[in-house]
Length: 334
Image (cartoon, rainbow, N blue to C red; front, side, top):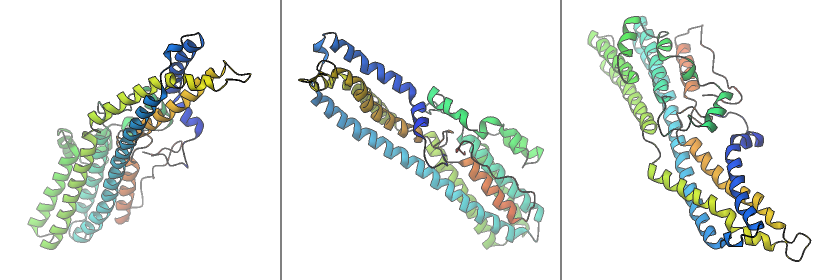
């Protein structure tokens, strides 16, 4: 998540420079041909304007859908924050006087669940963008914690060696950690350590965590529909290709009767670049937000949120050696 006031203009220009180079070349080719006498390369601007309207609608639709996916992801982790705090004090108040070690173990297992979940959500998918040059280059400005450490090493801080090996043998580690929590809770209930009401309260929190995990996995594993994504790409490409051809005659007429007659055709390059860059960058902005867990600077900061939850829950147990909060690097925090 970008935590600064805004992305800088230079930062934006550098991020989109590859597209600027390509768009400049695409604008220059018809301009040079027209200047050399190939007047027939010019096409009427009206059909291109209609195509531009269609592109504007579908790019706007994509950006709206991308923001919805991002906002839903943020709501999911907002719910995890609230549910974790509720789980912490309900569990502490129910079991602290009878089995304080069990409380601490279940707290640690919850930290492990948060860790396993964020590692699973950072796993790459074929439709995500972090492997492309544009995004990979920008990612060097900040740290993606899940790429710097291994899940095994992180879970060692929270689980016993026996439980660690058991969890690592499973495919969905986060799910199995929540299943272990449910098992511990059932055993405490069977021993009479908690009453019916307390068991119901804590069990409801575990159900909420499972629900939150499932919602996050749905966003992670279901991409923005490929049919909408594909048609947006194709229409945008057609628009970008035809804009420089549609502005040729209009810009050539601009200099008629002036000292610039015959030379205003060169205005086609900057004007075509400006128009096509706007549309292409709007599409890129939507693409940058459509996968809110992949590790881009526009993602939900799940690592920071997980650390905040751990700090809050450790504080509930009056622990003094709290882990440090995660701070932004170059205005980016994940």
